[in-house]
Length: 380
Image (cartoon, rainbow, N blue to C red):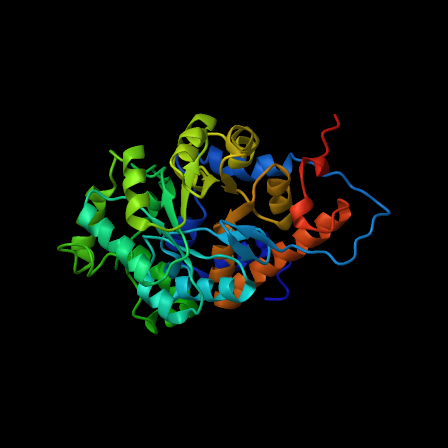
């Protein structure tokens, strides 16, 4: 893994190692993928101010996110089907994040269950909640997160209905893979991935099968998920979930200042500026371009994080400079996971940490907590 110098290096290794349907699942956006591309491109347009002859010794990236000390202002985003990038993927990613000192957030649509991740880690991880029509299932899911001592609940707000990702439709994505000639070929040409997958029992949605009513196998799971995402989700549901959970609550999927003000009114602990990685509303603005207006609107009332398009430590630095208390990564750690399991996730975090540390120093700062918009080059 040490020869991978960038997140792009890990991406190419993952492309060669992970079956196409699952690599494409991670590496895709909705419709034309314009928002997916904008998430990255808009970071590249932000320039940094180089400063010289300043003391660059004794640097620190330590900070806090939602009241939790972190080794750097970064968290691993909740991503569905993480366990299809690598066998036991959620467990391996959670272990890497714990060792590194950054939060890991487990998705409702994970392959490994809440309980299996809790059994394999020693510190509390965070849990992400999708709201389903079956409210009894949601209550039990929250209770399971409590029993696992999850440190925060991340409520996703922007998946009331599914945005279409053309790659997934064309690939016939399923978990586990279908046994058509196309899918058999994709798996057969990735023998290392297939061999590792044979060694685990975690091959379906571990938080759902055996827990949701009348969902005991893959066929019943497909029917259940097709009708369960709730288009009626409202701010009233946020209040209900906050009361039911009783712990730290983070709201994910805010892209508009008006929604940010409404989110702050809920009493949540933090919001995540996010467009779901460009996987929902194609044509929406990028997360980093939406961040400044949201920080201006509610930054004095609620902690603001951002997610979407982060591919380097410089991107993290830019997000913090524009007011985010932390950045979240999905695809970068998935690429690392697909490339090399736990070691690959660790390598992704090492790459980002090194880039963040050096870039902060060259901008004339020694402590990430002092970084502000003054490091952004706004000259024409």
